Amino acid sequence: MIFDQLKPYLWLIKIGTVVAILITAIWWWNNFIDGQQQIGYDKAAGEYQIKLDKQKDAALETERGWKDKWEGAVNERTETEKQLAVARDAATAADDRLRRTTSDFRQRLSSASAEACRSAAETAAGLLGECSERYRKVAAAASGHLADIDQCEVACPWSK
Image (cartoon, rainbow, N blue to C red; front, side, top):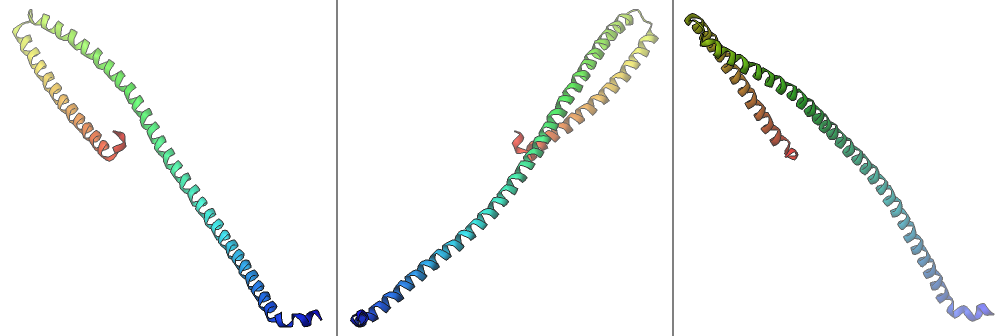
């Protein structure tokens, strides 16, 4: 009855059913592929985040190392400044003593004998030679330190 009336349209129903099945299969396949892509994306994003975290940790560790070196250099420089201040004070005191000794020496020369003057001149010449030698050593050391500073400025451009 009803099926007899539908017989001429049966081929359309079969084609419609096949089309509906195909559309459903395509929709399912598309969702399956999207899910697989999302899984792949999530995995890649996770791996990227792990690598990024490792690089951030490495950068922080490097920065900590630089900071520690910087603080060490600053502390060393502060200690050196303290030592230089002590050395400057000692040199000033020695210079004052030398000035007094020189003044006393000049006053005694006027009343000294010729032999005493010759002996004093010989001693003064010896002291002048020693001073000259020490001056050359200090100048050579200063030149070496200046060369070290120049080398550091070239090797460490961020220190300028």
